[in-house]
Image 1 (cartoon, one colour):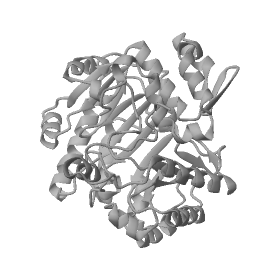
Image 2 (tube, one colour):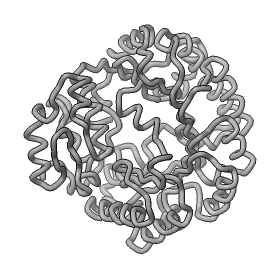
Image 3 (cartoon, one colour):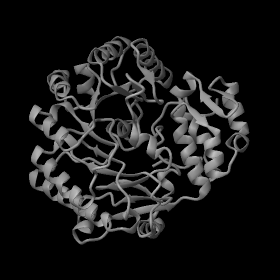
Length: 435
């Protein structure tokens, strides 16, 4: 195979957007501003992402824009800036006449902020951008930042899906990887969460954290099964360029500290088998759900089908009217802009129709299946014929199966889907850095 699936190294593997972020530039800022100032498609879902960039500790595998050194005054200033940015966006023509379909609190650690700060932030946002009609509000949590009272506030502000960043139940592995919490904090918060009866509890796990063994992974899978969450999200460990572990490899010449891809995939495959045996269904390359009829991922499915997303906060990403753009990545630059009443755009990219087609196709492939008629109707393109050689190669390698009107990944294909996606990139994007 030529997808690099068995070659170890440092760099992003997980694909969250297209074209790669490194293709975006300052020249796209004007297109981003124009996209916001143009009328939006009222038939296209609209979402709001709120980046809360604070953490108790920085995980050694983390590549997100986070801060571990901000005091209460700095947090208040940032949340005020976030509310100011939402207010600026609420006045843009692209939002006019449109209701929010989903809201996502991500980070960082949204649960890091106090209950009072959260309630005030939500009130300020809902004053200018109501979300009475939202289908889903997701809120990411780190166990050690939660109290029963804070969880009650999280529920009362309208959160429907609580996503608990467990990652692993083994204390030695959690400590080695720089996680701020230990298993006793997970055990402490679970009864509170279950007692408050959130619509959906999602537990995040990572297959292949540094120090993982078959014994520890089996224990983590069983502990998660014992909790019986509504959904489970399992990512395979990777080492993007700007993590603590990656810098040790690149700067100090240390060996790659994680298991090879074959073993990471084997661990994820084992987890899928165990959850399926317990009645869960595979929902995507990363997710399993306990009740497929009741559990939805509005945020995921809307984005993977071309929804508009207003990404707010430092370094956040947006996709609006066919244009990608990212906010300024520096603390002061971002806050100075929003406090002065300016949109904090830092770089952008105006996607072509072909870009939009490829973006939706590769993201939807993460679901494990594609409806070819969808792309024919929306883009007037026969994706089977357009990428016939790629599909044939993948089928020959046992990674997918094709039938009339559909393309379905095999389990092996699903477990390595992110390694396969660059095969569909336009030539100019195939050999550039992802971020």
